[in-house]
Image (cartoon, rainbow, N blue to C red; front, side):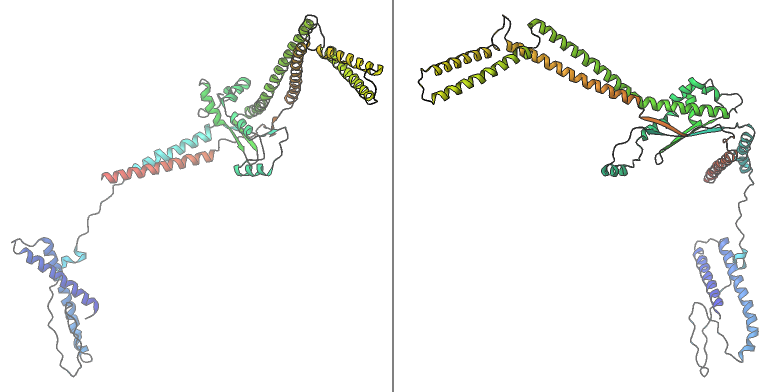
Length: 489
């Protein structure tokens, strides 16, 4: 028996065994076998009948082959095969247990197929596609092709520079600048300030005061979707303005680019040129404000120093009138000092001559010695009188030392005020020089030009964008709806 027949016999045997166990288990309960068991038994019997028919056909052809080869044995699949003995010995065959055939109704092709769920043809997908994808695309196409107003773009490029020469850059400064990503331009803050100013409320107010920018975007020929309602407040127009203007600054190149959109070429050119002038005014005001403040402070300091010097000079004049002396140091003190120096020199000379005569062994009462002693005495008296004039009172007034001390204090105040006034004047001149030089200036190296063709709207790109957005939203919604429907089913 071949391997397929062996496997078939084993399968039938196992089916019959299972059916026998099932029927044996059902007999004690007195219950009739169910339809499944009956169908199984019928299928096994049908299979056995088909095997017997095929076996009979094989037996009819077997005598022709028995002359040349030994007869094949039918062996149960549950029993092992016996080893063949030599032809000289007597052959014995093991008894084969008959296996009942399965009924035909148990064959796979006899079982009925499960009923398939027939899907109802739904038109909701088509309707939703038409409503949420096709209709918006058609509406966008009609709007952008027939109704959307042309928008013209005026562009200008500028850079904020410093007029003063920057200081020396050391290696440490360069290293720190490389670490923090600093650029060579030192006016980065001013460039960012100007770009922010171009989209701020301040420039909107200034443009409204100069050219009436609000009315330029509320012209009646502009389509309803793009036109601004002139009755709305200025805060709404600022939001509208930020959509129509774009200003960017590239920190690497140090160049700022500003673009403004309008609905006529003349309006775009007018707004762009006005923005350039307003940006220059802003940079000038920002750069000159600290210098004007410094100039005003220097002028006030000069006035304050002048007033202080005038007060001190008035005090000195009053003191001179009160003490009846113009210059104590030059009139009294200086003359007394010179006289005291001369008297000291003469006294030293007399003393030297007296010492020389004493060494000549002259008598103490010699006329020459007595004359020199009288001269020395007179010089000492006169020197003491000159030196005592500084501390003594003069003409009933205060002492000369006190007069000179107060005068010197006033003179010191005068010199201090004079020095402060000189420094204030120098600071004022420097502030005036700095105020005349503009430290920052804006350089619009690409000035705005009048546009000749419209740039916006990009009709094809706008329609494609609307179509893709609607299609993605519709797809997501469709998946969500189907997921909910399957979950509920």
